[in-house]
Length: 308
Image (tube, rainbow, N blue to C red):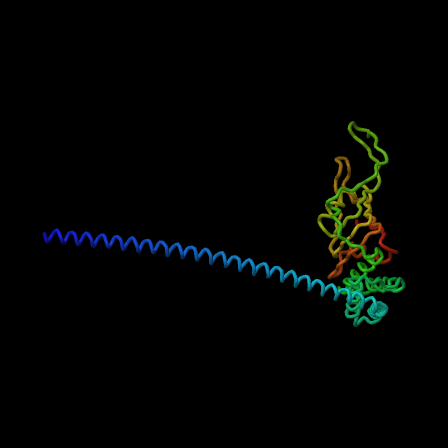
């Protein structure tokens, strides 16, 4: 009897333990769910706050950029106005500096550097110099190239001046053209007739022409594009932007037909109403020097050049 009572008590104790365990498990489950929900809410709130901060940062950066662009635009406008107002003094300083660079060989470097800096400012502000000053400056730069050719700053200023003069004559046109080297040139065919051999055709045609594109003369692409064309005929660039950085202008002999003898190209380069953009950090290649001198003595942006 006593043992039976003990078993009953033990059974009740086990039942109570199971109920307590079930209650604890239920409470733990409720706690875990609450914790999970709080974590989700915390993540969502953090994401919303982060998105808000990011949006505000983008908005603020946009406002700052707009404000900065406005300020810089006003500064550039003010500089243009100031440069325009002082243009007579600036062009006189260019003329005086180039003259001094010629007659005072001990300070040629300083004088031409100053002249180049002023010319650059005039070009950036799109302010033209008088025709008389431009003509005199051309003569001074030509004289400096003939007598002070071993001074790198002479060539740097020469490139700056030729770029300025070219863009001034062209009315400050932009030079954002497609590359000539990615285009097919046009050539007018005057006559096409059968040759002496079967399948042979003789064609009489005009020069190869490019228009409204840009070319970098001292680039491998220019060599590959111009060399075979100049083997046949002249190449004409109409209203193009011509870039040159002082490197070698290379035109190589190209064998076009099996019976054609490989020799120097027969064609010349013609620039009609082109914009020249020159940039020199040192003395250019001999071909480039000839191009600079040819352009200096030309009346405008039209000239003939033999690159061979």
